Image (cartoon, rainbow, N blue to C red; front, side, top):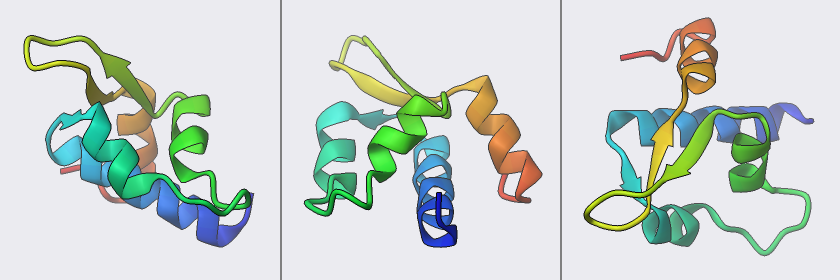
Length: 77
């Protein structure tokens, strides 16, 4: 993984940590057409974020692993 990708994954996890986001919004904001920038997929594969059902529909939330990742980089709120 490159520094750019790591930094973007960190940004995504931090953004989701502020408040659970609708799944569709996350995909709209973070999906890219560049096969080298798989930010959403990397965050999910690493276990930093997860989709969870809710009354409002599927939401994306930060996992405990994601919180640890944020704390390790000084970004936990």
